[in-house]
Length: 125
Image 1 (tube, rainbow, N blue to C red):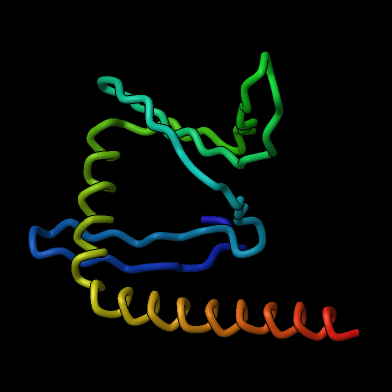
Image 2 (image 1 turned 180 degrees about the horizontal axis):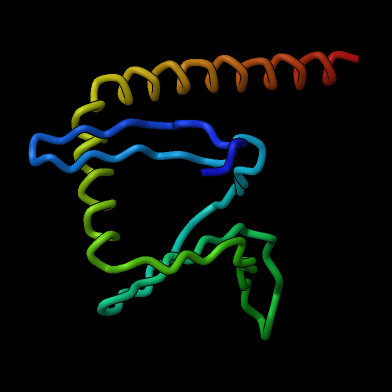
């Protein structure tokens, strides 16, 4: 194994399936995306991730422009396992996620109220 890797996670399962997950320590690509599409197939599926680039008027209608940022080809069985793991993780962390959503919401409302303050200041000048 390349000497420039780091151990991200050790998985030890009761069924004897043991996994060590490694990644290059200096070359993990992170990409921000706004949304995703799934193209289901058998035995392979595709996940296509996109970012919204804007809205254009075409033939008297507004059309959202999306740019594909990444496409992942994955065995459908692995995709199903990933989906189950996401749902299980969401359920197991439901309280933590709910608490964080509330904290985020409170901070967002606090910041929005600051915008109102600045608008009133501008009106008074």
